[in-house]
Amino acid sequence: MKSFSKRIEKLVPSASMSMAEKAREGNATQEIIDLTWGQPDFDTPVHIKQAAYDAISAGKNGYTPAPGIPELREAISNFHASQYRTVYDPSSEVLVTPGAKQGLMYLLQLLIDPGDEVILFEPCWLSYRDMVFFNQGIPRFIPANNDLSPDLNALENVISPRTKAILINNPVNPSGYVFSDEELDSIAGIAEKYNLYVIADEIYDRIVFTGFVSLSEFKNIRERLIIVNGFSKAYAMTGWRIGYLLGPARVISKVNLIHQHTATCASAPSQYAAIAALTGDQGVVDHMVITYKKRRDVFADALEYSTFNLIKPQGTFYSMLEIPETLPKYASKSDFLLSEYGIATVNGISYGESAKNYVRLSLTKDAEILMQVADRLLD
Image (cartoon, rainbow, N blue to C red; front, top):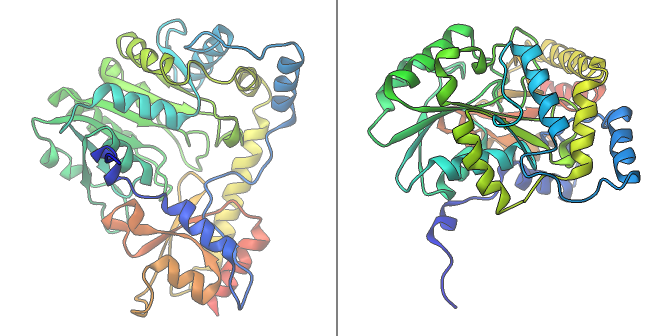
């Protein structure tokens, strides 16, 4: 048989899915507590599900316009304007995609030629690296500071003639870090200085416990900025696969060509559900965020005097836990926690060398379960 494409050889399995599979296999000595999944433990709110039922019942099950139904694009534009005082033309600057991840992949396919470089701040979501590799680009990583905050001082040092874009996730998966106004202003200025695109993955923008500033609020980079967002995290709609891109018309029109020749359009019922999400009661989001914050605080307080150092997140439903030196028999920090404590986590090095002494915890469990985790770690 002839060989596969060379670009597939650089891809690695998802670390979170691999550890989730280990957790399912169980442990002979104790029940496994699985903290690997980046998925809300809430159900999709009723009014959102009802909108999908209504759409299906009304026969709205066929193809839609590739960029998304006009009503949803209008709702996205209006909602973003209300949140961040930045208006995107729903007819030319908004593209609805089958999930934010798919939109990001489209975007990288558009921007990257073989050998082009994309700058990533460690620790960063594990799929970024593989998406860049799959599109024959080169990820350039900026190591984090000791507290896992981004090292903005190193940004200009990694820029080369082949640099095409800076990709940031704000708030950050896996650390829960939220970029400050000053940090975003610095990134915007450097992107403008070196004529780079900026891709801002803001999928966790609603799950914050501090203030949040969207990069779209920096008008000087409007023509080089693309926002990636969606409904999975804020509205507990992970399986609905519905996201969107916001950006200049010249970018969105080209991304739409890729979209037309791959997915054609996002799921019709999911689009109608997304309208209900944006135009309906936002108290459901507030309730989830309050719950995540309470869990974070309870868990952080419980581990305050433990030997494990918890990075207290400013946003998202994740946190990074620093693991002391482990015995050589364990292949990774996450294997150590799974074997010794029955806690399934994602190994920190999956998010970059800066996080090699950490694991990622997903705080999408009841506070009672998180207290069980703390009790195990304190034993």
